[in-house]
Length: 179
Image 1 (cartoon, rainbow, N blue to C red):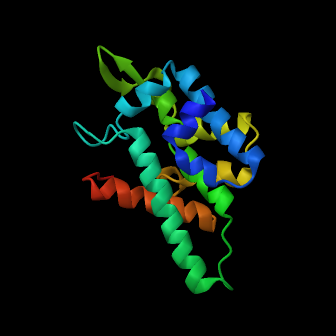
Image 2: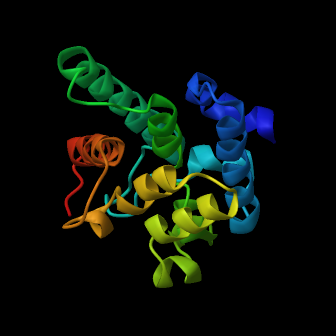
């Protein structure tokens, strides 16, 4: 399954730290298995249930958020290198994992993707953070997953978490999503 996940998320290969890269993949592997999905299902799962009849899948959204985050980080690094320090490995890992909990938040019923029992109790920032913790990801990466959505509003966000938060909402709202 590792090769399939890396093919779905080629940005994983940009993570220089091999151990971190392996933890990102294993987190996705467990989410897929635990959620009762197959890797090929990921391209049929909408990235959100908040946009009616959403045609953008979770893979496309995750990759778009990752690439948006990398562009933002690159610009910040170019212009503010003395003032802003960004860990690009953590940023990529956090972006690729920011919505991994949706694999547990969603279920397929009668051919339609709906909120699962888990999803009714725990939104994806919580379940995604738990998965990342279980797979030994650093607190910095778990923090990004936990704070990328409204659950992180009003609290501290690291520079990487802030970038992922805004990259996520730029992508969500540009497609008509409203919170």
